[in-house]
Image: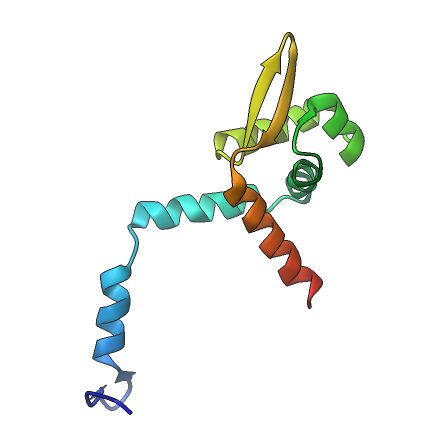
Length: 121
């Protein structure tokens, strides 16, 4: 049951109350840009493998990650730099060795939801 009649024109149907409701909660262009960049960073299968490895093991060094994803340390470092710049991973240096982990629980949750989505298809 609708509280208000929708606005009508010949070519379109608009429910003003729904439009106003969504527009009042609309996020900033910057927020949507940052979100798109996050998904872009995760659009590479190698980076997705890295995130999977870090979801499973919590903290790994570059050599471990390179072995897991069957890649060179140089290529792995490049992918990790991209993920770090996007604030998807962080690192903790112990001596000369950098140990990588997910930046926060949101990345794990985002990844797990995405994985469930593709596995349920």
